[in-house]
Length: 480
Image (spheres, rainbow, N blue to C red):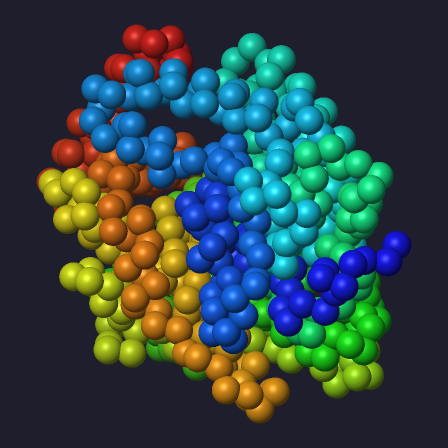
């Protein structure tokens, strides 16, 4: 199907996963897509026409708002009831009714078509039409479930599918007249033929298991996933029309520099990749786990090997010499204050707040803007970037574009963009106790090991856990 000239040859398009979608703290909405790395790359290139998904509401999950309603332990009973209803309402909004949610601007196409939760194979398998059908089936199951467990069982998949459907083909009816409804991300790129393409994909094929549950296998599963699925992605990227003049691929990051993995000792080990602590834990996790510093260093080296394999595979297939790589691993290690100590080069002053790649913390005694305690490059989930982190990634890509294309780009003021980030400006105070309570519970459940915090911290968290348990039991939310 021939596209109108207005949709052809945009100066920039983006495909990929949540890091290019703009997700923060497990949440994606229009305020975050506007500060996503591709949107900021477009700003640095002076592209005013770059279109991002204008999601009218957060896609099902709105963690930071939910935490605001739990500022006090006394607010938790009502908050839990309200959050449960909000989830049900959001599932109905995003995955039932019309075949798609309408774009507020009336858009029929976006230039950034990255969507959170996507895998390598989604780039060449998932379409809006397929996402619609699967989202409806999962929504029916969730809304028909009796308890909270059934409601939440497939919430992650619902976020992916609802987001993909809206992003790939923003048409309320997904009608046959929509040329993109049955097209994958790569097919949409092939149809529109942008001048340049930026790609960020692969994290959901195993890296999340490393940083959010300390997978014992390390990067072995990730390497297997890449070997199985990346060759087809490479083939289709390299087969894009010659009018796509340049393609920029983000390499995998260093797990040791991701915020969710935090040290649990003071002893350090010097290595060829900088310092590592003796032990680490998954501070933010969906399954508690630990690494030794030696093992985490080995995993970093395994990730480097996967990055080298990826570059070799692309270079073999890239007959047009247009594939370029963004060394996210090296860039992240260069600003890794968590492991190597703070210096002017790896700390970032946003207003009065010193931001680093440590786990995001709120201060228990100072609510609102004064309650920022630490972290700041990544959000509450310890994986997705803040606006500050997005701006830094965008600058890394812009530097690669300037070097490869020999053009002038405008470096972004990352600190000024960081001041636009509502999480850094006003962190939810409840995070000061929920982070530690959740970590302590998952740690005790997984290992039965002790804590490594001060007596004051222990007393505060133990008191909070006891109060939360009493409230939940009274509400018949839990039995034990």
